[in-house]
Length: 466
Image 1 (cartoon, rainbow, N blue to C red):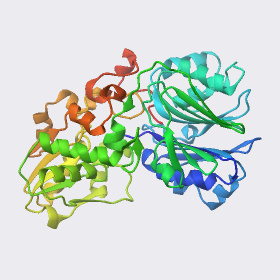
Image 2 (image 1 turned 90 degrees about the horizontal axis):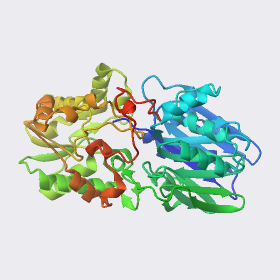
Image 3 (image 1 turned 90 degrees about the vertical axis):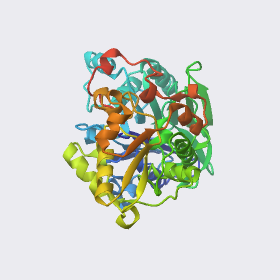
Image 4 (image 1 turned 60 degrees about the vertical axis):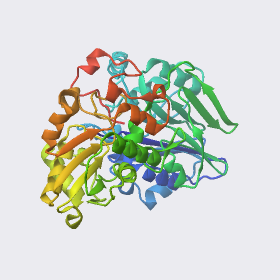
């Protein structure tokens, strides 16, 4: 499971030194994207920006952040891309010229009609600088004939289909937009007289901002010198927040739609224990996203919880590596068993999901090598049966092990003693939001935004790389 990106924005009515605040916010969103980062600052007249490849701490230093001071509006972005698309041209915020002046755009999500839109714009003479569908959105805004930036953004939203949470900045406005289905998260906070937009509430906490509310699906919020206003541009769409935000993607200390992610994951573990009982000595979680579910499993089963795997936090996520050989090595570099804890024990190992199965197979192997007597894999999500087209870079259906292999077949591949997944019903119960307000497409194939058959048949979706 590859991640996508994080967006951030601040409008201040008092301060003109926002670069470090945005930097701290992006740092809190670093788990959502580790390949590039960028910040843009506006002072009412011009937009200054800096983008670079790598983690926030690599891209920015004191000198660069000082050079970006002097503005009262800012937006930022951290990004993860597919293999082959990790270039500075695709780093965000993207900045384009328009009749409204310069426009900076940060995007989290993925469009399903990007190929058609790219062909249309190319036929009209536009030469793309990068390969992201974020650029398509920025160009549609910049080429709009509408009289205001707000109307230009709404016009763009009517042309694009898919998932998008956007923070858009002009020289004198900050605008947040969430797609009609609200697939990707976006929230608003307040710090003194400043307003903050963020992909997750944890990035509000880091600067001391108070959570105000989530941006609604189909909503646009505009902040300028006159204050804050909101409008609904898509009032009849069905809400479909990505369930995998709760399972894996969001930080456990974030809240989504009023639900603390940690609490949801712990309850997933409790339901998993109720559904799939097994005799064992200890419960361990795969760091980090499996920990809360493992604790919940332990509480429900009364089997002691222990730290059996230690994560090297200086190693990037294993799926960032393009080759399987390096990915397998990455698992060994990232996770190391505590041999005295697992040796001779019957283990229940809780992980958040199984995608290809290769990482889980490696985890089973390193625990076996450490002397585990039995290994019972328990997964705090249902089997992933379908690719995501809305901004999570899952592979094609052919590479999703659960789509073509029975639970017993997956168990044999992993070489585990037993394997069980959480049911969709109890996943929804854990999240405590109505089933019809969640996107469960990767689990049940019900896509909230229609996906063209041509896209479904591709081995790799067009640059799913926010």
